[in-house]
Length: 259
Image 1 (tube, helix red, strand yellow):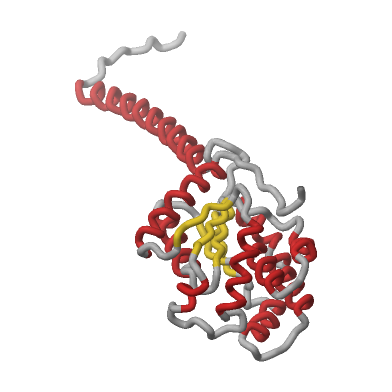
Image 2: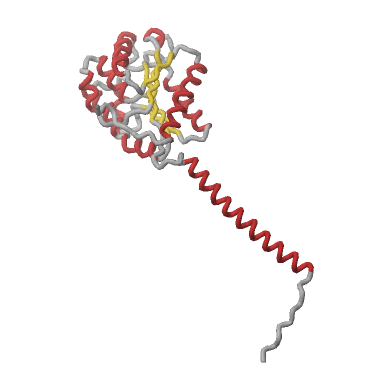
């Protein structure tokens, strides 16, 4: 015969302890679920709730000494300050083997045929294309100081056919936004450091400016580069931020000069 169970009422302290444990368990469970939900929501925000979310390809163009380098650096700082992943790129990239040949030419340490140097500039961009696409698709915005437009404008100014100049660039990634800092060759020549490199000659820069005008398309925004630096900076920030948001929402990448 089984022994009968003897019922002993819980003490007041035991009842309180049991209820407290139950309450803590419920609260902890809710907090755990809430943290998971918050984490999921946070990830959705960072990813733009869109699997096609990506970084923007923003290019700054213009004559020598128009202020591109300064504004490019400030744009990267601005975007990083807002929590965006951003990098500053420059073409030519003088760190590569091709880039070192270009650097030697630009500093007047070597001589190359005009067709040869144009193809080297193009090759310098092609050797970075794969990394550029990877960076953009990972969500990093690239602020690029000079791109294919410079290559075509400068080589065309030397007398090469514009279509011939564009041909090696076809298929590179097309910029989402081109910011053209507009300045007259005369004004640019008054700025510090002018004349240090091969192409910094007033007559030649005037020809380059003419070919830049031919290359304008719907991705271009023209900014008066003679304004105070802070005014230029503010305008660029507004344009770039709008572009970054657009790409964050899934604007597809496209290729340069395919149509």
